[in-house]
Amino acid sequence: MQRIGMLPETVAARALTPRVLEGYETPSFTALCESVEYAEDDSPRWHAEPVQELLREARRRYAEGAPTASDAWLAPRLHHTLRLTRAEASDRRIWNFLGVCLAPDFVRWRWGRSGAVAQTARFAGRWDLQCFSRLWWAAELFRDGSNYRPVELACGNQDILNTTMRLEMTQHRPAAQALLRLHKRAVRTGRDVNAAAAAANAAGATLVYEALAPDELQDAEALREWIEAAGEGSLAQFDSLPIGPHDGSVPHDAAEALTTRFEELFAQAPVRGKVDSKGEEGAR
Image 1 (cartoon, rainbow, N blue to C red):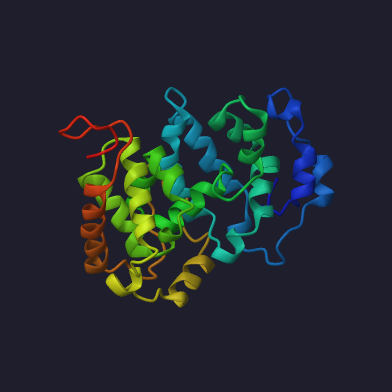
Image 2: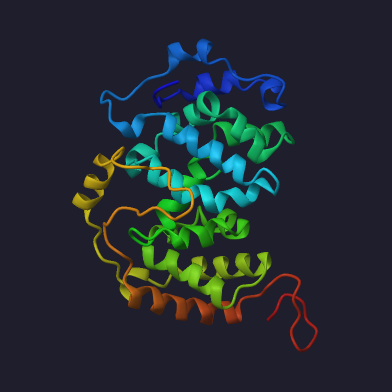
């Protein structure tokens, strides 16, 4: 398999039989290939081998531990290797191809075999559930310009990854960075993450993030150049973080202003299972 293609959702759904989901069979690429569409250009960013090499290395590195630990390592490197625009990454057919045609064995390794309905979404499902899509989008939403280190923090905590990905506020770059800074300063448990995210997201109904913490316009030309540079040099940076597009860092002051605001909200947020000084549950 030389190129990454696009697999329609109806075809992907038919391929994910119970025996495939349970690991007894692998989808037949030969049977699916007639339905696969390919991009018109032959850019190196559509070459399959770099992604396959990355996934092999992830499995090798985390063979002895929990597969969930691979998320923080893989997300920035997948984003750096598979260079997509946001419009392209919104096309589920690309992720269907990766999950069903290119690397179904990796999906099964990462997510196991339990729960056939849930498993289907890991092969070909919603953007925040599909095995590879969720990591690419986590890297896109939480990177600080060319710096992928915040992505490691976000993907290294499953509560952050599972709770905050679908929140509209993460589309605002200073808000996404503020959530991570809050995690480093005050959030300790999964319930803390849920409470902090809920409080910050609810406040967004009245708090205009752009007014309190304005972002800077990202450099579209720098992003385009980074995408077009796919294949130049070695993409598989296994032992050091890759460098993302130089399309502009998140304004420090804006992220810090929102972090302060989120800390205030979190201080008043009820956290399930915690008790206050009066012994009342759900208060801080």
